[in-house]
Amino acid sequence: MQDNHLPALEIDNLAVQVVGDRAGRHVLENISFNLSPGETLCVVGESGSGKSVTSLAVMGLLPPDALRPSRGRILVEGEDILTASPSRLRELRATRVAMIFQEPMTALNPVEKVGEQIDEVLRIHSRLGRAERRAKILAMLELVHMPDAERIYDSYPHELSGGQRQRVVISMALILEPAILIADEPTTALDVTTQKQILSLIRELQMKHNTAVLFITHDFGVVAEIADRIVVMNRGKVVEVGTRNDILARPREPYTRMLVSSVPSLVPKPRGTLRTDIVLDVKALSKTYAGKRLFGRRRSIPAAQDVNLAVRRGEIVGIVGESGSGKTTVARCVVRLQDPTSGAVLVHGEDIAKASRSQLRPMRRRVQIVFQDPYRSLNPRIKVGESIIEGLVNFGRSRDEALSKARNLLDLVGLNQDAMHRYPHQFSGGQRQRICIARALALEPDILVADEAVSALDVSVQAQVLELLDEIRQRVGVGVLFITHDLRVAAQICDTIVVMQKGRIVEAGPAAEILIAPRQDYTRALIDAAPGRDWDFQNFRPLRSSVR
Image (cartoon, rainbow, N blue to C red; front, top):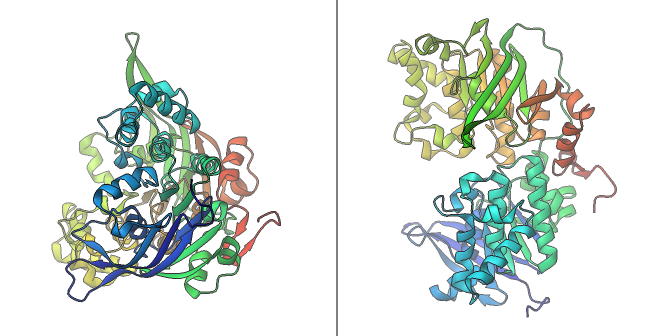
């Protein structure tokens, strides 16, 4: 039985070195902290701070040809995993330490039913018979509040929603009741209501089994909701460690103060009323997908129904809602990556929705899109300058003229012109997103669609990109259709907010009106689910005395 006086996890003076680096470069230096049974310890910091490397080191999953621990200890219930044999490590991973990864679809085998994937853990690490294993798995699926556990057991990952897939990964991690659960950004891609459910679930299971939780995140709203203590990391080192109130309300270090104050407020910034021309007018837009046949008839799935919205020159219109609300479907129909089933998408009066393929090509320069993942949006084998000028050259600009414009665009998005000659992998995530914005602006579009363009970025980089988008719309007058599940981001950047649920618009209006005085229960539920809503991060204080 576990000794509650002994830390579940103790990291002592850990350093991780780059294999084969002549200079002996380290990605982690002198990392020390501990985690007690039943405690939630949040590790925060910008991309590249060493958060995920620390978690992989604890799991014994560092890539041996790239990174190796060079000194220190990692004690799991007093046992140093850095000296453990491969077979002992394998045993510890399942029985004493488990991990939930950020993207459940990459953590699950797409061609194997989820029940069989959870069963594999029990089959390898327990002596239970098949019937006993199945009963235990179904009980766990019910414990994580899965609807119809029998159906989920026999489903493939692609047949489940993002929240359901994350629950499957949690089931897999907790099926053997480990002492330590490492959660690496498990809610980053989830909407606020699903995120709230997952956080509540982890807390519920933690209390039941007295599990120690190491939670890796860049979302300070989540940190404010769940943390007992916080570790702040920067460039492979621990900056400071303290209780939740110490770090959020009384941060000592300038880096910590910068991080916390970068968290956007849920209170919208005051914005004047725009009376410019309408550049995008979406009228009665609908999109229906043909689903599986049911009793000989094909079932249709409405993804967007009777959507009406307008974007003025220089205006930022945000579309918010849960996963499956129709946000991205509307965005993809606006840029004609999908053909709408009915309705009109008017750009300066021209209907993109009804344009033929030949008519569509010249219209495409007027509507551009920035996707969520900048790395997947850029060709890794093409230098940044070539990516930016591709559209210009395709539309008839000379190469010299296109290169000149590309250099000006890099200046506009705050990057040096030498970026032209580098590849995407040589930039940070925030820099890559700036490159994608520059590429989208190259054709001087009337409409820029940003589809979750900052959701994968840490708070400080997110703040920079939001400020950049706001500056660009003011300087060049582009209208922005901003798709997001993060209400804090919407509050800071949007003039108008459109709330969607199940393919329909629930309500729409000025950002201040929607977020401060919502009329609909659904909108109020979204706002209530926003993590950290009881904190004023920019002024380092709780908004309610009830905050512990």
